[in-house]
Structures are given as C-alpha cells and as structure tokens.
Length: 388
Image (cartoon, rainbow, N blue to C red; front, side, top):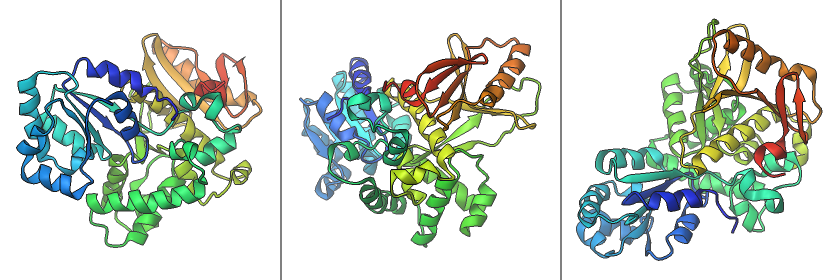
C-alpha cells in the first residue's frame, strides 16, 4: 500500500472531533485508509443490504452494537442514521467515536450539515498524488502519468488502465448516476461524460455543452452537479480581483483524474499522447488536480481560481497565500519558450498597479528542472508534483 498524505490529517482531526468523515470518489482509497488509521474499530459497510436495512429500520439498535464506535462506510445511503449519531456522540463525548466514509459528497454533507454540524472533522480523499507515489511508484514519463492517472488500483494490481477504466465507468459511474438522477437514455449520459472530458480545462458553456449532447442547458447543469457530487469533475471560478479590466465570469471545468479523462477521450496507450490534440488540456488538468490533492490531503478546501480578462490575457491558476497572491501557468511542452511567461507577467503587472501583495509567478512545464524565466519561477512536472 502506498502511504497516503491524508493519514496525518485524519489522525489530527480524530483528536478534536467526535465524528470524522472521509469522502471522495469511489476507489480512491478511502476505506483502506480509514481501516488503517482506525484499525481498532469494527468496520461496517451500508452497501451490504442487510446492514442497510437494519440501519434504516432500527437505527438505535444498529448503533448500539458499537459501544466503542465504528467505521461506517457508504453512510450516505442511510441519512436518518446521522440524526441518531448526533445524540449518541453528544452523550458519549468521545473523540473519533465514529468514522464515516462516503462517495457522494452532496448527500453525505447535507446530512452532516443538518445533523452533525460542529461535530465532524472532514477530509476529502482524491486518487494518489504525484508526491504520494514518489519516485518509487510514479510513472517514469509525463505521458505515462497522464495516461494512467492516480487511482490506487492501477498501482497495486496487474491491470491495464484501459481495462480498469472501462469497468470503473460501468460499475461505479453509471450505477451512481442512476441513484442520483433519473437518466432515461444512458447512452446520452455516456456521451455527455465524454463531451465533458473534451472540455476539461476550458470555460464551461452549458448551452453549448447541452446542444452537443442533445439536452437542455438546465439538464447539462444538473448532470454536471451529479459529476461534481461523485468527485469526477470540479469547477474553478474566476478570481474576484478585477485589476482594472473586465473579467470573464464563466467557470472552468476540470476532471479530477487525468487518467479517467484520457480514457474518456479514447486514448488507449501513452504513446497516443505524444501528438494528441488534447495533450495541453490533459497536462493542465493533471496539474490543477495536483494542487487540489495537496490541499485536500492537508484538510483544506481547494480555493483555486483562474484569471482571464476580456482581452484574452490569462493565467491558469490563482490562489491566496499568507505571502500574497500566487499565479501559476501550465505548459505541456518539454522545451521552454520565452513567450510562456507572457500571461503571468501581464497578470503581475496589472496586480502590481492594484498594490496587491504578490508572490513570484510560477510556470510549470513538461520538462525537468528548476529555472527562472523572465521573472517567473519555472518547475518541471516532477519537481512541481514533489516526485523528484
């Protein structure tokens, strides 16, 4: 098992909250991590029909089986259980009494907000980050990294990404979709997911997306929400600072695993990525998710933004730090080009006029090493991910 960086965060939260929640996409390693950290607690999954029926029909007796607490998996399947948990943990006043695992963040978090507010420490666990893989486990080339993605099963089993993702989409994605929304035409939804993959790293135009899939913009918005709920995609909002220019207000769409995105685009081996038209979007998607994983593993919210003005000036990611705003541009090429720094430099000049505290802009590219280019800190992909 590859050690997960969220382990320390779980252990920290376990000292200060009676309930610890671990959420994330299916097969991201949630159950394995929770059972490792809380090995002394019994484990129950509500995917077991008998356990689910018991919890739903008699939650008091169900919970009474666990005088020392328990790890409860897929707990979003029984929302009423959360109300009973509230009374129980308030009575016992014991930290890390129950550990909740869920793969549908909306249902679980809605129940937590209603029944367990102030009692829950939460960690969101995405697939493996580059830093978690390290040099010992990470693919040796960037194309292999983008083709394979980060799901743990691809690193501890003898299975090809193409075989695994094909079954993942059928077994988990389509099943979860049926539970969350009534999709009459599953083929239409499959096309929708693939069209979303083709738009990862782009501004999200719901009307155009819906028209391409034969659905309304309203339905496209609802289906995007389902993909977000299942931790398959996320949206980055434009940064709120204007800097004297009219800003784009449309969010950008990103898949949360670049390997799944590549499979949905029909990429069946790493060699295809060398000349693929979506290579730049795949690299940007991988880099953005690396930043999200770093924050989630530390128990923080993502809080990443992008910046683009009406004249086309843009930087891929902007986020707040204690030292000031940090901007990062992503380029998939392995050879530095001098014009790659244009976007970050334009952003920096506008931000400086606004007297905004800034950090040195970053530029992450598909090559190797650490450099300085026209006022930007340049990092190769392995250095950026913490692999090198």
